[in-house]
Amino acid sequence: MSIIFIFILTKYLHQQHEKTHQQHKELLLQEAVTHFETMLMLRHWNAGHGGVYVKQRDGISPNPYLIDNVLRAENNTTLIKVNPAWMTRQVNDIINKGSSRYYHITSLKPLNPSNAPDLFELEALNYFEKNADKQYYYKGIDSSIQEKTLPDTYDFMGRLDTKEACLECHAKQGYEVGDLRGGIRISIPTDKYEKMIELEDVNYDSFFLLIISLIGVLLTLVSALLYLFFKEQFKLEKFNQTLEDKVEERTQELNNININLEKEIENEVLKSHEKDQLIIAQSRQAAMGEMISMIAHQWRQPISNMAMDASNMIVDIELDNIDKEEFKQYAQGIIKQTDHLSKTIDDFRNFFREQKTKETVLPSNVVQESINIVGASLKSHGISHEIVCVSEQEISIYSRELLQVLLNLINNAKDVLIEHATHDAHINIIIAKEDESIVIKVCDNGIGIPEDILPKIFDPYFSTKDKKDGTGLGLYMSKIIIETNLKGRLFTTREENETCFVIQLNV
Image (cartoon, rainbow, N blue to C red; front, side, top):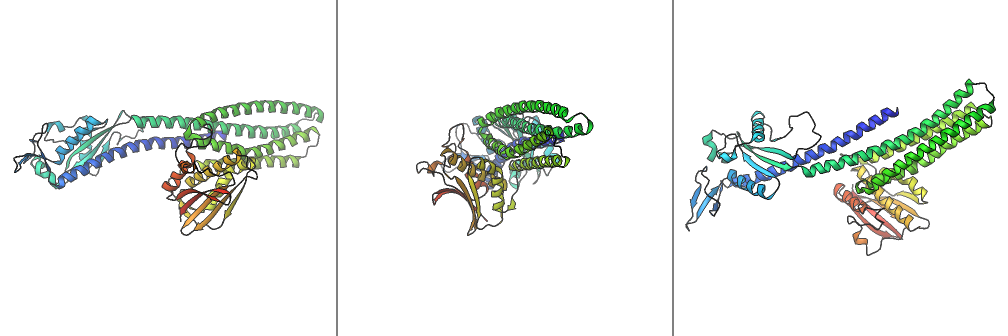
């Protein structure tokens, strides 16, 4: 069963990893399309004026391939005609000299020999000839094999069809309106995208190893306890030895199992600690580190309960007080606690679930979900909390992003209360409806925010914590999420000796 679970988890993480790689490739395509459409707008502007005339100067001579390529002005100034194709080529030359990108206008029947296509461009133009409905061509467009790495240069071509204005110069070549005229080739270096993919690979490997380690600890603990119970039950029914001999024998075995289990737990905790240090060192994984801490708080009580049930079973054996019904109750208690651990895993896995579409939710449900995650951590530090729902209404939002912001605000409040050892520490969350908005306030009775740092709290990389405890990105990213992604507002107020962070969302 555990192997199947790990396989499913591995498959899921791999799919998310592949999606990230594909997104980087889509970004390359979008960048190339943007460059191409910008060039199209320049050509349309030129074509809309029937070509433009520029003053002759050194380095610019009349284009021999154009009709009416020279115009004499009244002041005896020579003006040279620049049509869309020639203007495109001159702009390309400027870009090619001043940047790492490469532009080239080409055609299957070029008037200017320098516009002749190379192998990639010929391949793209032939593709357009066979596919009249296709606007773009780039490497791998017909390939069913997903490339694992990017080439050094991303080659792209956008299609140019014959317009009415093109016939002035190209009608003699046999072109008609709507025919494939040629294309603009754009080549973009992929080094920065390759570096982004390499960084995602490192983060993926670290996250995968961490999850596998946590699952290993849980499965080892549950398997050992269940093994202990069924083995004892089987031994008691099978053998007719005296109870004293059996108790002594089983007790020794239990001691050996506990010693081995303690060593395994110590090894796993050590490995988990080493991975935690790596995650802390990577600012992009800071939120994941907080989630692991919260999992530990959620699991501590169920694990203690399972250990207590197992101890009671041992005591009954030693006292020769074996009751099958009582043993059954102990086993049911262990199963109940493992169900709770499984639900906890689902809660935290949902936190990291990717969300691409909005969903209609009650804000109070999202608030309660955040308390489900951090509640054990608050309780362990002696911090009380209260949710006050004055009024609310369903809203359509990215609920995972709102959950992330709420966790940031609650954890910040918790850290302040712990740091200053606040007496009777508490956190209040108020949900209310004001006009056409839903307002969520996260308030604490800490020392408040000093006036001199109040204007800086939403700045990136600004933190009042030690460098090892804070990245300075929590409030900055929270503000970005609320005001950019959720189209709301995030600000802070001081109300009745409490510091409040206010989330305002449009209904």
